[in-house]
Length: 266
Image (cartoon, rainbow, N blue to C red; front, side, top):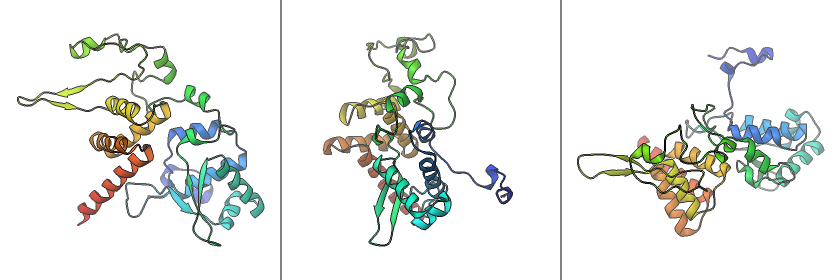
């Protein structure tokens, strides 16, 4: 139950929270933006990620129509100032702005692909050095390696156990590979089944779509966690034949998920 502390200007998670990706928080902290510009981003998060999609209760809203008057109210500035702030963020590629008709305003959304942000507003190379590959769930399992740690760790040094010791099979080592592909198998009495793992998915994406980096890997893992490994594997295969990217893959999975939700409701 809400405590009502927000009306006393006291923050309390029980009065509502906004779910934000760790990468966005890290990128915003590092971004070369003014305080007002960062304030606009925070308010956009509040008006999008702070609300549950009524048609899909397990999802958060990702875009919102916000009028200039509303921006002025919450940024506590004049219209000319709010308009300038939004223009800067759109120019930098940090947010997107879609017109809904002359005189009707715009729909705003956060650009979650930080790699697409203008290099003038963020040092992406420095961000890659600082960000950890696996921080999607606000926790880091014991033994999880950061990007810098992985650079100094070979595939064969995983808790002092070699790959050959893990599966009793001979696996050729590749010194340049940071993300080793390990095939997990489940054994049955008949017809052993090979289980595709997240490392294989990343390798498949890297070979058939585009060369991966830690940001793309984090996005792939997020999508895999949300939609499942097997559907993601199928979507990557389809996208590869059409020479499409991550947006296309996520669109395929989102449409399949919506169809499944519809079937469950009927």
